[in-house]
Image 1: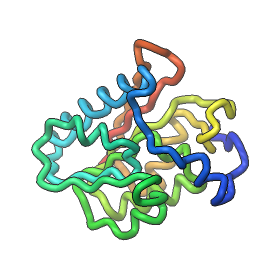
Image 2 (image 1 turned 135 degrees about the vertical axis):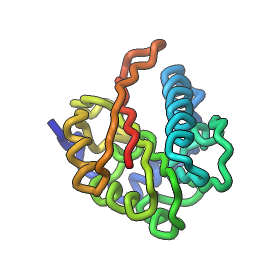
Image 3 (image 1 turned 30 degrees about the horizontal axis):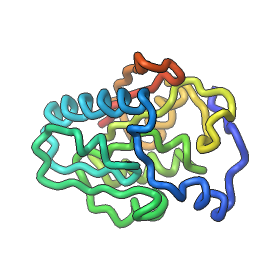
Image 4 (image 1 turned 90 degrees about the vertical axis):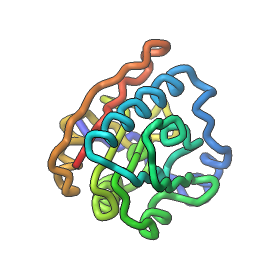
Length: 182
């Protein structure tokens, strides 16, 4: 069911769309998703023995910021302060865990991005909406289901992939796929 939801924006349109820094606390469901993602990150990092983490599409850095895991090193960045992830990712040194939360639906080539992340990280924590079918969110280019994401991850070289679905209790607008990949 993978589908492109809208035409790609020009660079100028994208800059206008993302001109304001992201603040997850503006929406109750985002607060719940961030909390759940941070909980999963801590569990996953402990399981794989991670000491370094990166989130180059961190928005406001809340997921890694909420993490209680004893990270030795954190790399954060976002569109407003450091630029598009497609441009910042190539300069990243390898890390144990890469957090890519609510990002791949925003980029023109999510397959390329997942492959690039694979070349930089031993593990991936990925979240993305489940089953988005319309263009109601002006920031999203793509909609897909868990089978589509599993295929994309496997093509990118991620072989041990586990997913949970999470629907925020406050507003059941999106159900989120939450992937742990190695």
